[in-house]
Length: 462
Image: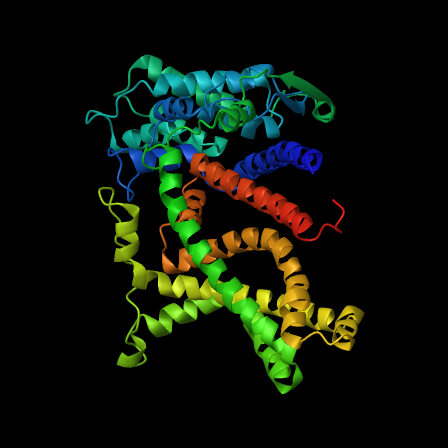
């Protein structure tokens, strides 16, 4: 048994590594820019309606968040790409990549980047023409389209209020942009790969280091510690799932045992009802409960529970006092989670009861004159309830996954709601913490259920 537990615990680490690595890949594939998202959330200088950022501001914030590093330990790029590409700031790097895809030579790209940086030194004050001020603001955001760059350079060339050196820079941009597609890299070189080694100073290495040291850093949204936000939300998720599992197991075992033991018409009605409950999607059930039982839209008698969006949380009060203030808020999410779990548990219990009561040892016990009560409690119920212990390991991840949907619909301040907001806000320090906790709880739950199953039934081979 000890060897089995140690071997299973050793497999937790490769499982978590695969989980974390998959999450890192997904974080690079989702749309949106985490740097811009963090600047919008944390900066008071820009309003959401009129948000603009210069390449210097972007580079500073990107370096602060560690997103200016390469993604992995090495990169496999076409031979036409220069190794100095990763030395450019993020905005310039995106611009250079767009041009490299069009087979533009690296020398022309460097010339363009240098001239645009010169023009960014100009303050767009009132002495300039309005078109020139707009062109400078756009240039400061590093447009990735060379055609846009040429248009704004043309505007700056015609503004006589600019200093001669700035006019010369705009002229060189115009000239270089016209020749972008001339004398580029050889096309066949695009099919030759080159490996660029970045060492350990990359985003994936720091991502793994944060996981190993459990130092996720601050949240990109509000600057608070990611673990602080996760642990505050974890209490509500654990409470919601604990209550739901207790209700599902308590009522499910009772109903499944009675239906499996008695049989007859009650068993047929029970199976039909449980199939319907199991087929109901959790998100649909939670939405219906919210719509029909938290508003007066369909009659005053339907407004049973308070609005699910209002939760009384306070950093000063204890967690038990917050539970007391939100008892009525928990009814709808608990019911939405419990119904699906209840149907699953009761159907499994009913099937086990039917299988056990038809075995030969039950007939032998009756032949020896043993009473029905003793046969039921001593043998049938005990053997039929053993699979429910193993099933607990599969119900834990199912409950956590279902609670994510319910928490979003009912606005429960738990891990599901927190991860939902963090994904749309590109707050990956919070997302990785939530996924880690969910993964660890799932693996531990599966291990505990297997060990308990062996303890209950020594015939089981691990």
